[in-house]
Length: 252
Image (cartoon, rainbow, N blue to C red; front, side, top):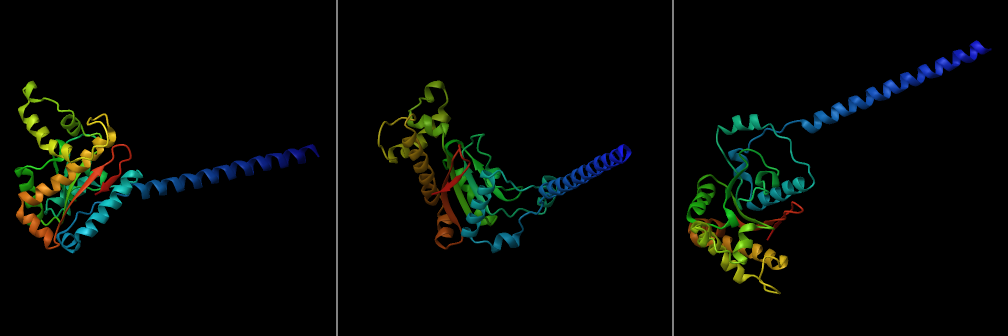
């Protein structure tokens, strides 16, 4: 009787071990499959035909979806080596983004984009100048991009110093002073519901919005060509603001 009990005890233990090993193996296989799916690289480069067939509104919609991916930490996996090689054939970006130089605003990642997807121009305070507008004319009238985005961002240092009247010239930074002076008209345009200071976050955010909108208008004035393309519905020139806290881009 004792031997029989021992026999059944060994049998139960053996079955349990087999069951655990099977479950572990199944779980491991599922994990491997999931990892393979997650890491499957996307290497396609935007083609001339794809660029031609997209409307400005469709492009903006795709950029908004890409930003949703960024906010939810679900960026597309890309094979950058393959993209780099494919991009040697030519470039057909769908948009050009004028952003601030702030290192905390990774433009391609913000819209979940890869090599060859967009042009990016950067200058502190995302203001326009002739060189940048010329680059935009190349991007749109020559290279076929259909959307121009002026993207400001919250907690912008350039806007902060423009609001607070930082005297950069006295520190022998005349070029920086010129840049801050370019932002100051937006300070005057902003809604003043309290202290005119960068410490007034609501006021500062309003200046950031006004500055992006003013830059859009200045681009239209500086470039009759792009203004004409926009009137014809071939491109759109829009303003947006990137929220440093949430990662979300709000199109104005």
